[in-house]
Length: 126
Image (cartoon, rainbow, N blue to C red; front, side, top):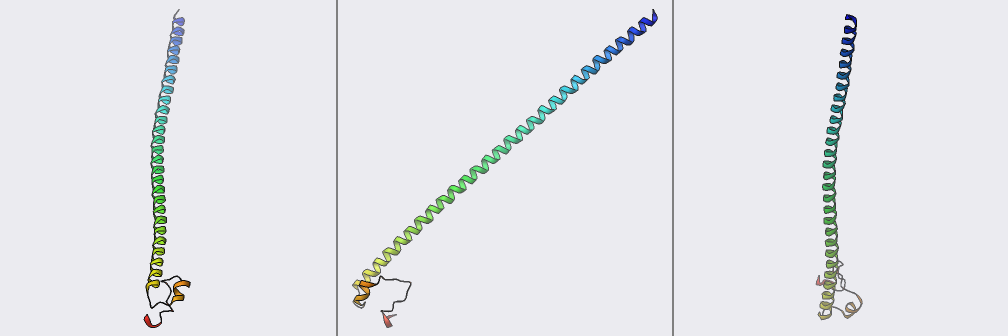
């Protein structure tokens, strides 16, 4: 009967060892899953930070584009204003030529005053 007790004891020890191995594998598996969840959470947080940074950069780019567009519009307005001023200056020059008794009559009718070119009709006056 002693042999049965030894066999039974060995079976019980093997069964306990098998249960311990199963429990240990389950615990290791749970730790691995927990580590994977933690790593996934870190990646999600990094993705969110990266998305926020991308959104910030896009916002800055849009602001710069809007500022550039406003600057372009301001430059175009200034150019139009300068052209208008040139027209006013030409009109004033023509009026001055009309009023000036020393300016020949053919210049008054035929040629608009162009301040960038020397005036040939004025002779020694310049």
